[in-house]
Image (cartoon, rainbow, N blue to C red; front, side):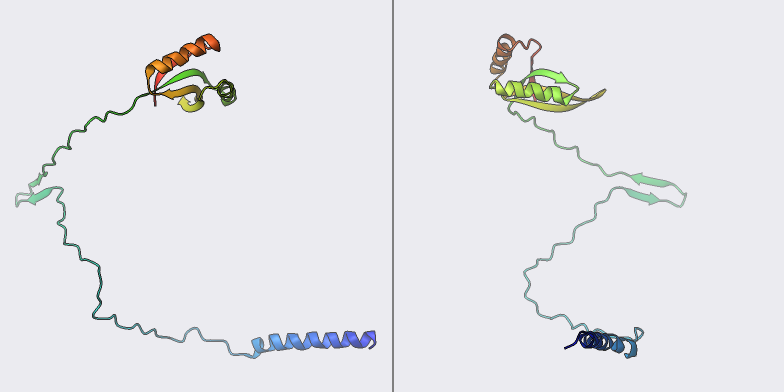
Length: 171
């Protein structure tokens, strides 16, 4: 087949396919959206064996009783509210940590923490809000006994030249 004949056939196929697609859109009837339609909802079943329990009616809680007399005097009676039960103090575990330093720059705190971890201590950095911004505390521990924390402080003082270490309760 010759090239011009091929091009004419391809063009004719494209025109026919476009006509098949778009002509029904132009000729077809538009649906009316103003036509009413109805939905029939079936009645619920009458005998349902349900395991849902009906809760008893609860009484409304009165906050105050208000009475108005003919003399336009309003009297409000407040109900008595019982005092809450006293809180029992819970005896818990007390932990102790050794605070090695306090820094305003997190890089310095992380550097000291890494140095202490490499020396075998369980160091961590705790971020606190201070007056002039965040404060980063480098701490070691926690220990359950204060004696162990004091011994760790002494080890830091003698072996690692950290003389400003203090023992504090945690948390």
